[in-house]
Length: 541
Ligand code: 9MR
Image (cartoon, rainbow, N blue to C red):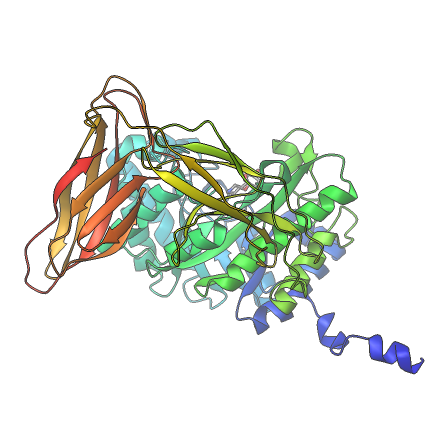
């Protein structure tokens, strides 16, 4: 080999080619896969990859209720044991999936009376969790799975219809009793971004923990699809849960596409995998990433979504795809590329559809040549030294809501790439929102103190009601904090504090209120020990 070629070789080629688990472990994270018992028992290639690439496994189906307790009190652990034994042999952690779910639960459970259902939950959890309580490989459980609807209401499953939401706390307590050392998780899909469903989950986790219910961890399934766009606020969302004191984890990652595959779809898919791994690396409380399978030969996607597939990191012949390289390189390097080149600066935004509280902006798109790919745009309000981020988008337009009536906005846009590099600021655009409804009295707000303790309290709900005769598209509530009180967190609205005045604007999903309709938000406050005052002067505009 010539001298020049030697110089061009990467300095750490041996380590760089190491399997995923080596790089993940070096970062203090796990990289896992869901395993199916069929190929695990009869396909050598499947076993080899499962053993060498991953340091964590989840049973794709073998630990669900219909597998472990098909008939009342009659337990069958053959599939579950096969996966746990495999993990022990290969020095892997096992995440137990799942104890309480509305699917794959036998009919005999679904028809039980409330008291019999409570007993069945108790027996099932104590037996299943108890079986592996002394096995050091089994470290965590999905105690409840998919308890929310998309709008944030509780799913009206047979569990909820028979027991109300009490089954959730009961299940966590039963699991803690069965294995005091296991990490206990709540898991769901479509909660990767900040939205009504993830906010409902956030509120539930916070309230359960305030009541002493042992919720230790939150799982974000992450069944993504390239045609629906990447949840750009994933990292921010993981962080807000982490700030509650729980562990977070990506539990069922796959990224499907409309078939047939092509190189451009593969490249987009690789960017999604890279972005998810990067988000987990960036959040200290994120324990790791589990992929929902690893080979396109065995994936739930084609059976569920007609015409879609190729969602995993190996193809159906066990060949690595670009998405494998993306996961590998991101775990190895931190950003997945050496990309320090920002995207090009976006064009001047143009404002349209301006109302009293919303406006649409669009601009000419940026391009990214640094390797990590264009991830989206941040939209800012120019306010001297403290510009505010008004919103994020993955396309070159955005509709801003919650704006203040009759107000001039100077805005600009910056493009973001997959490695987090930000472009220069676009030129600014200026627009002025329309005047608000005359008289200003289109809505009301009332706040209720839900719980209080010596040096703090939670106000929940603050109920915002449209008292006018036309629909509201965005609202602003103001109120006054007593002296010495400081905001400690909020949900379902964006709160800013100036002196003791707090201004709350609607979130993206709860700004629209038909006449007489209401929505709610909440917040938490720290106050001096012994002070019993609470906020006052709620007004809505
Ligand atoms: O991948 C699982 C598939 O083999 C099963 O047929 C299906 C049954 O509903 O469950 C799939 O796994 C689901 C997981 O347990 C919970 N989150 C969604 C997953 C994909 O449907």
